[in-house]
Amino acid sequence: MKTRRTWRTRAPKAETRSTTPDVLAAAAGMLRGRAGWAVGSVLVVLLGLLAARLVSGAAGDEAGTPPDTRSRAYADRDACLLTDERGIVSGAPAAPLWEGMQRASADGRVRVTYVPVMGERTAANARPFVNGLVQRDCEIVVASGPAQVAAATEAAAKNGGVRFVVVDEGSGAGELPGNVTRIAAGEKAGGEVEAVVARLAREK
Image (cartoon, rainbow, N blue to C red; front, top):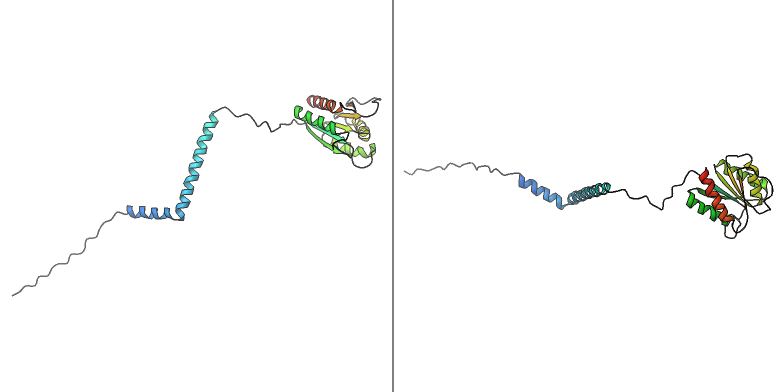
């Protein structure tokens, strides 16, 4: 009599695998795609910021660097030139005066500007321009030309806190207010204006 053997079928044993390789593989896959570029870019930026911070910290330990010599620290002073309609173009009477004022600006740290008087060459027409410079807080007003000189001399009597410099082409006769300096027109006028403006700027 034959006996049939029945083999017990054993259930397959479940395999236990570590999830670490799967995570690493997923991370590697992400780094190969667009996400990898993003992560790499962030790392580069962070490393750059860290390097800059280290360099700036080392530089901070050293002595401070001198200020930029190109930047000019002006004092709170303004010198304004009043000219005829020709302004400061080459050959105009006010051109050398303007050059002298610019030199005074470089030495005395005073701001300089100019305003041409347009229209009739009369003191009445120049008067509003002079008053405008005074209202703009020009501490020093330089006047060039007969009409401008007449208007500036008139305004000086009413504005004792403003210093006036008149470049007179005439004989220079006549009494002037105490806040007016007269300079004779000529070749040396530019240098004299430079010296006077620089002196007045220091006195303010």
